[in-house]
Image (cartoon, rainbow, N blue to C red; front, side, top):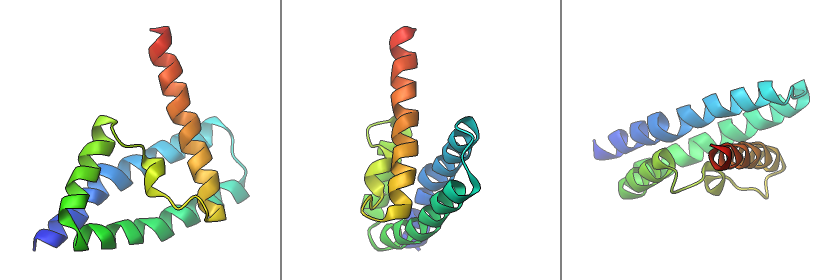
Length: 107
């Protein structure tokens, strides 16, 4: 029961917001269909792994979800950047993080 809640929590607090951010970033950079497919492939593959890990390690799920939600943990750290499809996603997310930092400095 607790493992199901942890899996739901990681989905709602990490995966869904990351997917929204990725979609926004893809639109902002006017990404090609191939790049969008590659990014989606990474999300699909790694989402299943993260949900499985959350189900097996509920405390990891809670701390990770909180860390990502408040900005202590970058979603990029959850990706296997050795996977070619995830390298593109990592670069996209890091670009978004850098843009947010620059906006914060200018305010």
